[in-house]
Length: 400
Image 1 (cartoon, rainbow, N blue to C red):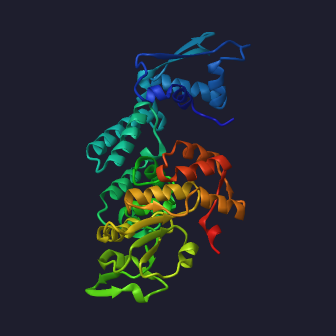
Image 2 (cartoon, rainbow, N blue to C red):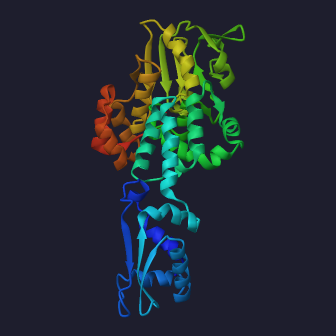
Image 3 (cartoon, rainbow, N blue to C red):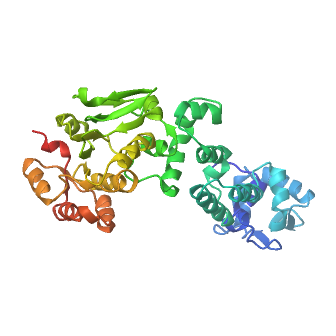
Protein backbone atom coordinates (compact mmCIF):
# COMPACT_ATOMS: atom_id res chain seq x y z
CA UNK A 1 0.00 0.00 0.00
CA UNK A 2 1.34 3.43 -0.99
CA UNK A 3 1.94 5.62 2.05
CA UNK A 4 0.28 9.01 2.44
CA UNK A 5 0.42 11.63 5.16
CA UNK A 6 -2.63 12.21 7.35
CA UNK A 7 -3.05 15.68 5.88
CA UNK A 8 -3.05 14.42 2.30
CA UNK A 9 -5.48 11.65 3.24
CA UNK A 10 -7.91 14.25 4.61
CA UNK A 11 -7.48 16.39 1.49
CA UNK A 12 -8.35 13.43 -0.75
CA UNK A 13 -11.56 12.88 1.22
CA UNK A 14 -12.67 16.52 1.05
CA UNK A 15 -11.44 17.40 -2.46
CA UNK A 16 -14.64 16.69 -4.41
CA UNK A 17 -15.95 18.30 -7.60
CA UNK A 18 -18.45 20.26 -5.52
CA UNK A 19 -15.70 21.60 -3.27
CA UNK A 20 -13.57 22.53 -6.27
CA UNK A 21 -16.56 24.32 -7.78
CA UNK A 22 -17.14 26.24 -4.53
CA UNK A 23 -20.48 24.53 -3.95
CA UNK A 24 -19.57 22.91 -0.63
CA UNK A 25 -20.56 24.23 2.79
CA UNK A 26 -17.49 25.98 4.19
CA UNK A 27 -18.81 25.56 7.72
CA UNK A 28 -19.18 21.83 7.31
CA UNK A 29 -17.05 19.58 9.48
CA UNK A 30 -15.77 16.14 8.57
CA UNK A 31 -15.49 13.58 11.35
CA UNK A 32 -13.13 10.64 11.10
CA UNK A 33 -13.71 8.02 13.80
CA UNK A 34 -12.14 4.94 15.29
CA UNK A 35 -14.57 2.04 15.45
CA UNK A 36 -12.81 0.22 18.25
CA UNK A 37 -10.27 -2.56 18.47
CA UNK A 38 -12.45 -5.13 16.67
CA UNK A 39 -13.80 -2.83 13.98
CA UNK A 40 -12.80 -3.71 10.41
CA UNK A 41 -15.16 -1.55 8.35
CA UNK A 42 -15.74 2.22 8.26
CA UNK A 43 -12.82 2.72 10.60
CA UNK A 44 -11.28 5.85 9.11
CA UNK A 45 -8.78 6.28 11.94
CA UNK A 46 -7.38 2.83 11.29
CA UNK A 47 -7.27 3.50 7.55
CA UNK A 48 -5.47 6.77 8.21
CA UNK A 49 -2.95 5.03 10.45
CA UNK A 50 -2.17 2.39 7.83
CA UNK A 51 -1.70 5.00 5.13
CA UNK A 52 0.62 7.01 7.38
CA UNK A 53 2.92 4.02 7.76
CA UNK A 54 2.01 2.84 11.25
CA UNK A 55 0.97 4.11 14.66
CA UNK A 56 4.09 6.14 15.46
CA UNK A 57 4.01 8.12 12.20
CA UNK A 58 0.28 8.60 12.54
CA UNK A 59 0.49 9.99 16.09
CA UNK A 60 3.34 12.36 15.18
CA UNK A 61 1.47 13.73 12.16
CA UNK A 62 -1.81 14.13 14.02
CA UNK A 63 -0.08 15.99 16.84
CA UNK A 64 1.57 18.35 14.35
CA UNK A 65 -1.69 19.07 12.52
CA UNK A 66 -3.36 19.70 15.84
CA UNK A 67 -0.65 22.16 16.90
CA UNK A 68 -1.16 23.99 13.58
CA UNK A 69 -4.86 24.31 14.37
CA UNK A 70 -5.83 22.36 11.29
CA UNK A 71 -7.70 19.58 13.08
CA UNK A 72 -9.23 18.86 16.47
CA UNK A 73 -8.68 15.52 18.16
CA UNK A 74 -10.59 13.42 20.69
CA UNK A 75 -8.59 10.97 22.73
CA UNK A 76 -9.47 8.08 25.07
CA UNK A 77 -7.61 5.79 27.47
CA UNK A 78 -5.96 8.64 29.32
CA UNK A 79 -5.23 10.42 26.07
CA UNK A 80 -3.30 7.49 24.63
CA UNK A 81 -5.79 6.50 21.91
CA UNK A 82 -7.24 8.75 19.19
CA UNK A 83 -10.97 8.10 18.82
CA UNK A 84 -11.96 10.93 16.48
CA UNK A 85 -10.43 13.58 14.26
CA UNK A 86 -12.53 16.56 13.16
CA UNK A 87 -11.64 18.69 10.19
CA UNK A 88 -13.37 21.93 9.23
CA UNK A 89 -13.74 22.29 5.45
CA UNK A 90 -12.91 26.01 5.67
CA UNK A 91 -9.34 24.98 6.57
CA UNK A 92 -8.77 23.25 3.20
CA UNK A 93 -6.79 26.13 1.75
CA UNK A 94 -4.45 26.15 4.73
CA UNK A 95 -4.12 22.37 4.71
CA UNK A 96 -3.24 22.32 1.01
CA UNK A 97 -0.54 24.93 1.66
CA UNK A 98 0.74 22.97 4.65
CA UNK A 99 0.98 19.73 2.68
CA UNK A 100 2.37 21.45 -0.40
CA UNK A 101 -0.27 20.03 -2.73
CA UNK A 102 -2.24 21.68 -5.53
CA UNK A 103 -5.29 23.57 -4.33
CA UNK A 104 -7.62 22.69 -7.16
CA UNK A 105 -10.32 25.11 -6.10
CA UNK A 106 -7.92 28.05 -6.17
CA UNK A 107 -6.57 26.90 -9.51
CA UNK A 108 -10.09 26.67 -10.93
CA UNK A 109 -10.82 30.21 -9.75
CA UNK A 110 -7.66 31.41 -11.48
CA UNK A 111 -8.65 29.64 -14.70
CA UNK A 112 -12.18 31.05 -14.52
CA UNK A 113 -10.78 34.58 -14.31
CA UNK A 114 -8.38 33.81 -17.16
CA UNK A 115 -11.13 32.39 -19.38
CA UNK A 116 -13.49 35.27 -18.61
CA UNK A 117 -10.98 37.65 -20.16
CA UNK A 118 -10.51 35.44 -23.20
CA UNK A 119 -14.25 35.09 -23.81
CA UNK A 120 -14.73 38.87 -23.76
CA UNK A 121 -12.07 39.24 -26.45
CA UNK A 122 -12.68 36.12 -28.54
CA UNK A 123 -11.77 36.74 -32.17
CA UNK A 124 -14.40 34.45 -33.73
CA UNK A 125 -17.54 32.50 -32.90
CA UNK A 126 -16.00 29.02 -32.78
CA UNK A 127 -13.28 30.17 -30.39
CA UNK A 128 -15.79 31.88 -28.11
CA UNK A 129 -17.94 28.73 -28.10
CA UNK A 130 -15.01 26.56 -27.03
CA UNK A 131 -13.98 28.98 -24.30
CA UNK A 132 -17.55 29.22 -22.97
CA UNK A 133 -17.82 25.42 -22.79
CA UNK A 134 -14.50 25.21 -20.96
CA UNK A 135 -15.72 27.86 -18.52
CA UNK A 136 -18.95 25.96 -17.87
CA UNK A 137 -16.97 22.84 -17.03
CA UNK A 138 -14.92 24.86 -14.56
CA UNK A 139 -18.15 25.95 -12.88
CA UNK A 140 -18.85 22.24 -12.31
CA UNK A 141 -15.45 21.66 -10.76
CA UNK A 142 -13.88 19.99 -13.80
CA UNK A 143 -10.38 21.13 -14.69
CA UNK A 144 -9.33 19.60 -18.01
CA UNK A 145 -5.87 19.09 -19.43
CA UNK A 146 -6.43 21.67 -22.16
CA UNK A 147 -7.52 24.36 -19.68
CA UNK A 148 -4.45 23.67 -17.57
CA UNK A 149 -2.23 24.45 -20.56
CA UNK A 150 -2.38 28.10 -21.61
CA UNK A 151 -0.52 27.22 -24.81
CA UNK A 152 -3.78 25.70 -26.08
CA UNK A 153 -5.46 29.11 -25.93
CA UNK A 154 -2.37 30.80 -27.29
CA UNK A 155 -2.49 28.51 -30.33
CA UNK A 156 -6.25 28.86 -30.83
CA UNK A 157 -6.07 32.64 -30.67
CA UNK A 158 -3.17 32.63 -33.12
CA UNK A 159 -5.17 30.47 -35.56
CA UNK A 160 -8.21 32.74 -35.22
CA UNK A 161 -5.97 35.75 -35.96
CA UNK A 162 -4.24 34.39 -39.10
CA UNK A 163 -4.66 36.73 -42.05
CA UNK A 164 -2.69 34.63 -44.52
CA UNK A 165 -1.54 31.03 -44.84
CA UNK A 166 1.50 29.95 -42.87
CA UNK A 167 3.53 26.76 -42.97
CA UNK A 168 2.88 24.53 -39.99
CA UNK A 169 6.46 24.52 -38.72
CA UNK A 170 6.79 28.28 -39.16
CA UNK A 171 3.58 28.69 -37.17
CA UNK A 172 4.97 26.42 -34.45
CA UNK A 173 8.26 28.28 -34.32
CA UNK A 174 6.53 31.68 -34.09
CA UNK A 175 3.96 30.69 -31.44
CA UNK A 176 5.71 27.97 -29.43
CA UNK A 177 9.41 28.74 -29.98
CA UNK A 178 10.06 25.39 -31.61
CA UNK A 179 9.34 24.20 -35.16
CA UNK A 180 8.10 20.75 -34.10
CA UNK A 181 6.35 21.57 -30.80
CA UNK A 182 2.93 22.06 -32.38
CA UNK A 183 3.14 18.82 -34.36
CA UNK A 184 4.56 16.72 -31.50
CA UNK A 185 2.53 18.06 -28.56
CA UNK A 186 -0.53 20.04 -29.60
CA UNK A 187 -1.69 19.18 -33.12
CA UNK A 188 -4.07 16.34 -32.23
CA UNK A 189 -5.73 18.32 -29.43
CA UNK A 190 -6.12 21.44 -31.57
CA UNK A 191 -7.62 19.46 -34.46
CA UNK A 192 -10.11 17.82 -32.06
CA UNK A 193 -11.22 21.28 -30.92
CA UNK A 194 -11.48 22.62 -34.47
CA UNK A 195 -13.50 19.61 -35.61
CA UNK A 196 -15.99 20.11 -32.78
CA UNK A 197 -16.34 23.88 -32.78
CA UNK A 198 -15.35 25.36 -36.14
CA UNK A 199 -17.86 25.41 -39.00
CA UNK A 200 -14.92 25.33 -41.42
CA UNK A 201 -14.05 21.75 -40.44
CA UNK A 202 -16.10 19.16 -42.30
CA UNK A 203 -16.19 15.77 -40.63
CA UNK A 204 -14.92 14.04 -43.80
CA UNK A 205 -11.82 16.23 -44.02
CA UNK A 206 -8.38 14.84 -43.24
CA UNK A 207 -6.45 16.44 -40.39
CA UNK A 208 -4.31 18.28 -42.94
CA UNK A 209 -7.46 19.61 -44.62
CA UNK A 210 -8.77 20.90 -41.29
CA UNK A 211 -5.54 22.76 -40.59
CA UNK A 212 -5.43 24.24 -44.09
CA UNK A 213 -9.02 25.47 -43.75
CA UNK A 214 -7.73 27.50 -40.81
CA UNK A 215 -4.61 28.82 -42.54
CA UNK A 216 -1.97 26.31 -41.43
CA UNK A 217 -0.32 24.70 -44.45
CA UNK A 218 1.02 21.18 -44.04
CA UNK A 219 1.95 20.43 -47.65
CA UNK A 220 2.32 22.35 -50.87
CA UNK A 221 -1.06 23.19 -52.38
CA UNK A 222 -0.92 22.30 -56.07
CA UNK A 223 -3.93 22.71 -58.34
CA UNK A 224 -3.99 20.32 -61.29
CA UNK A 225 -6.27 20.85 -64.26
CA UNK A 226 -6.59 19.81 -67.87
CA UNK A 227 -8.14 22.21 -70.36
CA UNK A 228 -7.58 25.33 -72.42
CA UNK A 229 -7.88 28.48 -70.31
CA UNK A 230 -5.78 31.63 -70.13
CA UNK A 231 -4.33 32.88 -66.86
CA UNK A 232 -1.92 35.66 -66.00
CA UNK A 233 0.95 35.46 -63.53
CA UNK A 234 3.86 37.85 -63.25
CA UNK A 235 2.37 40.04 -65.98
CA UNK A 236 2.41 37.28 -68.60
CA UNK A 237 -0.64 35.59 -70.13
CA UNK A 238 -0.35 31.82 -70.33
CA UNK A 239 -2.64 29.76 -72.56
CA UNK A 240 -2.92 26.16 -71.33
CA UNK A 241 -4.47 24.90 -74.57
CA UNK A 242 -1.04 23.64 -75.64
CA UNK A 243 -0.61 21.69 -72.40
CA UNK A 244 -2.89 18.85 -73.39
CA UNK A 245 -1.62 16.53 -70.66
CA UNK A 246 -2.43 18.94 -67.89
CA UNK A 247 -1.26 22.00 -65.98
CA UNK A 248 -0.08 22.29 -62.37
CA UNK A 249 -0.19 25.56 -60.43
CA UNK A 250 1.93 25.47 -57.29
CA UNK A 251 1.16 27.30 -54.03
CA UNK A 252 3.10 30.46 -54.96
CA UNK A 253 1.43 30.66 -58.34
CA UNK A 254 -2.00 30.22 -56.75
CA UNK A 255 -1.26 33.24 -54.56
CA UNK A 256 -0.70 35.49 -57.58
CA UNK A 257 -2.61 33.97 -60.48
CA UNK A 258 -5.39 35.84 -62.24
CA UNK A 259 -7.80 34.21 -64.69
CA UNK A 260 -7.93 35.98 -68.06
CA UNK A 261 -10.30 33.84 -70.11
CA UNK A 262 -12.09 30.49 -70.21
CA UNK A 263 -11.61 30.44 -73.99
CA UNK A 264 -14.01 27.86 -75.46
CA UNK A 265 -14.69 26.00 -72.21
CA UNK A 266 -18.37 25.13 -71.81
CA UNK A 267 -18.13 22.31 -69.28
CA UNK A 268 -16.17 22.26 -66.01
CA UNK A 269 -15.74 19.00 -64.14
CA UNK A 270 -14.06 18.51 -60.77
CA UNK A 271 -12.85 14.97 -60.04
CA UNK A 272 -12.00 13.56 -56.61
CA UNK A 273 -9.47 10.84 -57.50
CA UNK A 274 -6.32 11.29 -59.53
CA UNK A 275 -6.57 8.05 -61.53
CA UNK A 276 -9.95 9.12 -62.93
CA UNK A 277 -8.65 12.62 -63.61
CA UNK A 278 -5.60 11.28 -65.49
CA UNK A 279 -7.87 9.13 -67.66
CA UNK A 280 -9.75 12.14 -69.03
CA UNK A 281 -8.54 13.24 -72.46
CA UNK A 282 -7.99 16.89 -73.34
CA UNK A 283 -10.96 18.60 -74.96
CA UNK A 284 -10.94 22.31 -75.85
CA UNK A 285 -14.44 22.86 -74.48
CA UNK A 286 -13.96 20.95 -71.19
CA UNK A 287 -11.95 21.89 -68.11
CA UNK A 288 -11.10 18.94 -65.82
CA UNK A 289 -9.93 19.79 -62.30
CA UNK A 290 -8.42 17.30 -59.86
CA UNK A 291 -9.68 18.02 -56.32
CA UNK A 292 -7.92 15.26 -54.27
CA UNK A 293 -10.84 15.51 -51.82
CA UNK A 294 -11.57 18.88 -50.22
CA UNK A 295 -10.02 21.81 -52.05
CA UNK A 296 -7.91 24.13 -49.92
CA UNK A 297 -8.82 27.83 -49.46
CA UNK A 298 -6.00 28.87 -51.81
CA UNK A 299 -7.23 26.54 -54.55
CA UNK A 300 -10.81 27.68 -54.04
CA UNK A 301 -9.86 31.34 -54.46
CA UNK A 302 -8.65 30.63 -58.00
CA UNK A 303 -11.74 28.54 -58.80
CA UNK A 304 -13.92 31.44 -57.64
CA UNK A 305 -12.47 33.40 -60.55
CA UNK A 306 -13.51 30.59 -62.88
CA UNK A 307 -17.08 30.62 -61.58
CA UNK A 308 -17.27 34.40 -61.96
CA UNK A 309 -16.02 34.19 -65.54
CA UNK A 310 -18.45 31.43 -66.55
CA UNK A 311 -21.63 32.59 -68.25
CA UNK A 312 -24.99 30.84 -67.92
CA UNK A 313 -24.20 28.39 -70.72
CA UNK A 314 -21.27 26.81 -68.84
CA UNK A 315 -22.10 23.57 -67.03
CA UNK A 316 -20.48 22.48 -63.77
CA UNK A 317 -20.13 18.84 -62.69
CA UNK A 318 -18.46 16.99 -59.84
CA UNK A 319 -17.44 13.32 -59.85
CA UNK A 320 -16.66 11.58 -56.56
CA UNK A 321 -16.63 8.16 -54.97
CA UNK A 322 -19.99 6.46 -54.46
CA UNK A 323 -19.73 6.67 -50.70
CA UNK A 324 -20.46 8.84 -47.69
CA UNK A 325 -17.25 10.84 -48.20
CA UNK A 326 -18.06 11.45 -51.85
CA UNK A 327 -21.46 12.85 -50.93
CA UNK A 328 -19.87 15.16 -48.34
CA UNK A 329 -17.30 16.39 -50.88
CA UNK A 330 -20.04 17.13 -53.43
CA UNK A 331 -21.98 19.10 -50.83
CA UNK A 332 -18.81 21.00 -49.91
CA UNK A 333 -18.19 21.82 -53.58
CA UNK A 334 -21.74 23.11 -54.01
CA UNK A 335 -21.58 25.21 -50.86
CA UNK A 336 -18.05 26.56 -51.15
CA UNK A 337 -16.87 26.37 -54.77
CA UNK A 338 -19.36 26.07 -57.64
CA UNK A 339 -22.94 26.88 -56.69
CA UNK A 340 -24.31 25.48 -59.98
CA UNK A 341 -22.49 22.15 -59.76
CA UNK A 342 -24.33 18.91 -60.54
CA UNK A 343 -23.28 15.32 -59.73
CA UNK A 344 -21.65 13.23 -62.44
CA UNK A 345 -21.89 9.42 -62.38
CA UNK A 346 -23.17 9.51 -58.81
CA UNK A 347 -26.57 7.94 -59.41
CA UNK A 348 -28.34 4.58 -59.17
CA UNK A 349 -27.38 3.55 -62.70
CA UNK A 350 -23.67 4.03 -61.97
CA UNK A 351 -24.03 2.39 -58.55
CA UNK A 352 -25.56 -0.71 -60.16
CA UNK A 353 -22.66 -0.85 -62.63
CA UNK A 354 -19.95 -0.78 -59.95
CA UNK A 355 -21.85 -3.35 -57.84
CA UNK A 356 -21.35 -5.81 -60.68
CA UNK A 357 -17.66 -4.93 -60.94
CA UNK A 358 -16.56 -5.63 -57.37
CA UNK A 359 -17.29 -6.02 -53.69
CA UNK A 360 -16.63 -2.45 -52.64
CA UNK A 361 -16.57 -1.67 -48.91
CA UNK A 362 -19.05 -2.49 -46.16
CA UNK A 363 -20.84 0.63 -44.91
CA UNK A 364 -19.70 1.29 -41.35
CA UNK A 365 -22.47 1.63 -38.78
CA UNK A 366 -21.23 5.07 -37.76
CA UNK A 367 -21.44 6.26 -41.37
CA UNK A 368 -24.87 4.66 -41.76
CA UNK A 369 -26.28 6.67 -38.86
CA UNK A 370 -24.84 9.89 -40.28
CA UNK A 371 -26.05 9.12 -43.79
CA UNK A 372 -29.58 8.38 -42.57
CA UNK A 373 -29.77 11.87 -41.06
CA UNK A 374 -28.17 13.64 -44.01
CA UNK A 375 -30.19 15.72 -46.47
CA UNK A 376 -28.65 14.78 -49.82
CA UNK A 377 -30.90 16.59 -52.33
CA UNK A 378 -29.47 15.72 -55.79
CA UNK A 379 -27.71 12.69 -54.30
CA UNK A 380 -30.71 11.23 -52.45
CA UNK A 381 -30.84 8.39 -54.99
CA UNK A 382 -27.19 7.49 -54.28
CA UNK A 383 -27.78 7.76 -50.55
CA UNK A 384 -30.61 5.22 -50.72
CA UNK A 385 -28.50 2.84 -52.84
CA UNK A 386 -25.76 2.89 -50.22
CA UNK A 387 -28.18 2.41 -47.31
CA UNK A 388 -30.17 -0.39 -48.95
CA UNK A 389 -27.13 -2.35 -50.14
CA UNK A 390 -24.84 -1.48 -47.22
CA UNK A 391 -21.84 -0.97 -49.48
CA UNK A 392 -19.72 1.91 -50.76
CA UNK A 393 -17.62 2.04 -53.93
CA UNK A 394 -14.69 4.07 -55.23
CA UNK A 395 -14.88 5.83 -58.57
CA UNK A 396 -11.63 4.15 -59.72
CA UNK A 397 -13.69 1.01 -60.34
CA UNK A 398 -15.09 2.74 -63.44
CA UNK A 399 -11.68 3.12 -65.08
CA UNK A 400 -11.42 0.99 -68.20
